[in-house]
Structures are given as C-alpha cells and as structure tokens.
Image (tube, rainbow, N blue to C red):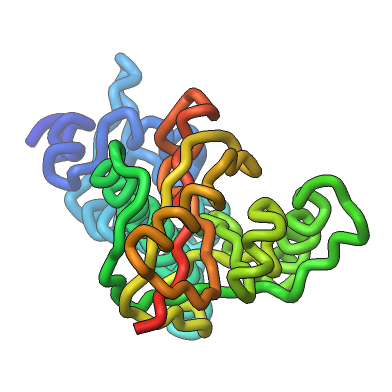
Length: 267
C-alpha cells in the first residue's frame, strides 16, 4: 500500500493484470479514471476500484467494444447488461462459425498439398479413392468462348450470390469421358472441394493422371491417359474430375502447378 492507503498504478496493474499502459489509456479516455493524482502526476487507485477493473476486464474479454463499455461504467442494469451480453453471444457465435469455416478451408488445402507431394514424380496411378464431398455448380455455358474463364467467372459470381465460401479449392468435372477427351480444358461444371458439400463423389478404383502447368494447360495428358488405360486393360467410364493439388498456395512458378485428372474405372 502507498499514498493514503491507495495502490500505485504498478501495484494496481499487478493485482488486476491490466497493463500499466492500458490503465493510463483508460484514464485518459475517461473509462476508468484513477482515484487520485499525486503532485508528481502519479496515478493511485483504491481497493474498491478492483471490482470495476474486473468488470471492465470481463467486458473486454467478451468482445464488448470501448465505445459500448464507456456508458456501462456509470450506468448498467440487469436489463441493459442482458441486451449487451446477448448481442456479444451472437457475435461470438458468428465468429466461431467463421473460424471453423476457415479451419476447414486450410485442412482441405493441406490435404491436397500432401497428396501433391506424395505423387510428385508420378505420371499415372490407379488409386483406391475414399468418398469425398463437393459443391458442384450449374452446367457451364461456353458459347464458343476460347477459354474456360468466362464460365469460371459465372461460377464464382453465382457462388458469391449464394453466400458460398469461394476460398475452398476449385476443380472441374466432365460429365463423361468423351467430353474430357474432346476438350480437357472445358469442364462441364466447376466445383468446390468442400467437406460439407451435398455432392458425394463415390469411392473405388480411379485412374489418376498428373500434369504440371498453369491453369488450362493439359499438354498431351489425354493421349497419355488413354494409352496407359489401354496398356493396362482398364475400362474407363467417367466422370472425370480435374483438381489442382499444388497451385499458387504452395508454388511461386505457375509452370510447376500440379493438376490431377481422375477417371472412374469400371470394375
């Protein structure tokens, strides 16, 4: 104890765990003035102020802004606090949902990167895939467009209007093998790799082919896939899914991006 039985700002800070700099800021703001100022301008606090400091600390941890908190220091009732806390609960719930969604996006990205790293030196393989979920968009309309970009932009804009999270990785689906063979750069529809999607891709045997390059670059992937299937006596039925395992999220050079095309094998 010090000055007339009061606590110095350092002592008060230690007890309340409110940093000294924040106590000074609260004082200057008028939110939580010190009880006494010494001739040397030092701030002093009473023991009773620990109660108010605890209230302010709690409100700050609940996410109540300083603007909302300021009038509550001098005027609060159960009715007022009920409204404040219910509003804060709603905001915390919304933030929790956003954090969970962000975590889901990161988990999908990590999973795709791991798959890309695991097949870095492969051209083709037969995989025993587990079921996974997608959010699939409407049928693409190209109208003689030279690239997939106009249809892709339509897909993105529609997703935004529907309130979908467009941060999930995007891929392209070809309704059948013939569509993929005809133009592997013009998918029938686009999709988000989203674990909460309503569209389920069945598991089983799939032929996976890998190619390096920027979006829309498939080179001779189709030819090599068909040759591999013929050599290994595989009957391909489709559909076909194009998914980028490695992209700008993990690589600087677009020429090193890695796309995987997976084609359903008839068993």
